[in-house]
Image (cartoon, rainbow, N blue to C red; front, side, top):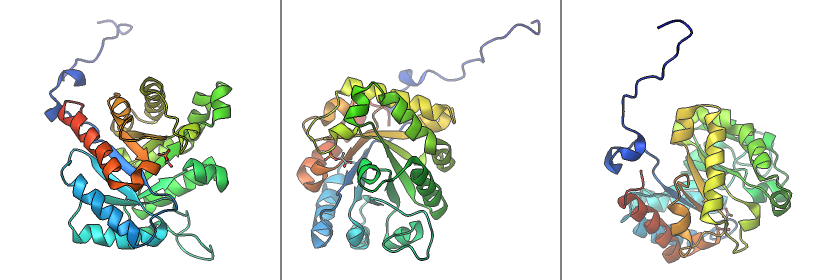
Length: 285
Ligand code: PEP
């Protein structure tokens, strides 16, 4: 072959679509419940235990609950005592380890309390508390250093969507943290949460959401292809038991970040069960 000739590398494995689900090293669906400023006392423990009972029958799904700070230790303790695999996330984290930062909580404090995940850059933090892409990056760096796994949220507002800026906004948000998230391998999670869909009852159509998820995976692939394939991308925004199937069946939708519907164990449990059912039906895990 002359120097100017090129050839495709030999395919050593079957395309992923042709492999039986059991041998696919794929993405385990995650259903995460963001309780926001609710269930911060013993009611949080009751809710977590009710969710844990349902989750125990659906191993295919990774389940995470995010109580307010005040309930993290109690909820984590209850789940531990019940030998539950349900994991605990903080809804936020600060980027310094200790010091004069009144009202803030560091990654290592959250780890000690029993959290293994942190939600970072939720749109309510961005909109109501002025969090910027720069803050989000600092928090991902701190979480990585402190041993917390990240669920980083991105999403456009209605104005941005109507101005045709959806992908531009998401690209800006994703590129702020993607290289740092890649340092935790495939352990990090991205949540696409269109702001206009959060708490409004308006949900993105499965096809629209899939398109954005695929675009986000493409943005992650600019950092590293394997990282992009391993990273779970959750959809969030008015997910409920009755609309979960269409969303979760999409190829690049690897689970859901659920707000309002996460406060009621039965409804949340149905979303967990749906994600598990889709895996059993052959959606790669
Ligand atoms: C959220 O707050 O992350 C969220 C998705 O909320 P809801 O499900 O209530 O829209």
